[in-house]
Image (tube, rainbow, N blue to C red; front, side, top):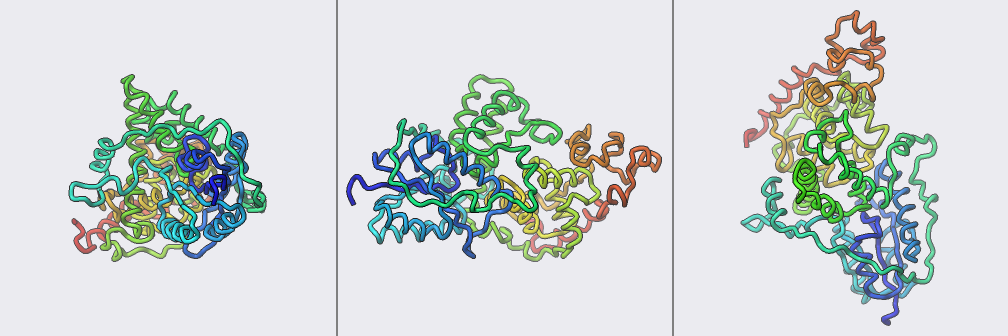
Length: 483
């Protein structure tokens, strides 16, 4: 191959132009660039994207295409096996180098390793970069040389090791390779049509790199000062809402770290909030660290003793939970927010997760699967890791005896019931005293609020006190339950 042969940049979960290590490395060659995104989720061993994620991907690819066009590049879209598509592109373009940013899902590692070997056999060099994490999973080791299993020491070690890298700078204009055949994005049918259930997603989100930078800047300009307290309040706009942008790589973790760390030296509330955000970025790294070293955590109980847990086959309960019809207002508010917006407040994610697992005794994997399909920020490492954290079956997990009481959680974190009134409007007329536990409200109060239990709003699926005792008994019966 000559020095004028094009190079390929394979976009995956790094759908941005700025500070993109793989794109920058490709541009540094000075050669024409083929930019490609491959929709590769049809194989049995690759988990297909959920519905909300597909919607997000459509709009993110529109944004990426426009951003690349401003740099002089055309985004090529192809669907099918990534190995086959890259093989075709190498043959058709004469490229002898392929660049990508690493993914860490078990199937992605298997696929990418095979692709690297196949390209090598064709005398094509594949170069992978870190565009998704603060540090690679193998860069952080315990004193014994193994992986971390507890977050706090992981966080301390990351803080010691991490040095934010220089921005990956691009030249003002890139040279595009000869046009390659591309699919039409609309032909992928990523957005729902009949029925079109994505109205709430359109109302609440704008995908793409520019939107990501705007969301980060807006958060650091205001809500970050109250982030340590408000991040637990679903009735307030107190979280960063960066999770989908980080998952899709529309903003990279180094970019987010740089922006937040710039506030540390000023002291005061904004510095404290920025430090809290950095810790959340590290939690994201920690979940990927676990997934890399213990890939079974995505589908199996990380603690094998939980294989003996007596899960209930409660189809009606699962459906009621999915639909936000459990009779517990904070749980129902969260599930309805999820269905409408493709997102749920983090505190409420823990509450609804605990309710499904510990009140209804339904396998955490059923909840993880529902979140995978309905979250715009569906991320395998975070989704599985956080569900196992709630279940008590994962690494650094919540203790088995920590069972969220949905009523007291609601009263503590949504005291004025603003969140409940927004998402469960049939209860909006109830006074604050009763809206968190309508089943205890006097009949005349319910009537005046037009609340009729069992009709306009369901009775509780289960008595929480009894459910808690049942769950505790099941946990304590596990082998080595106190280990």
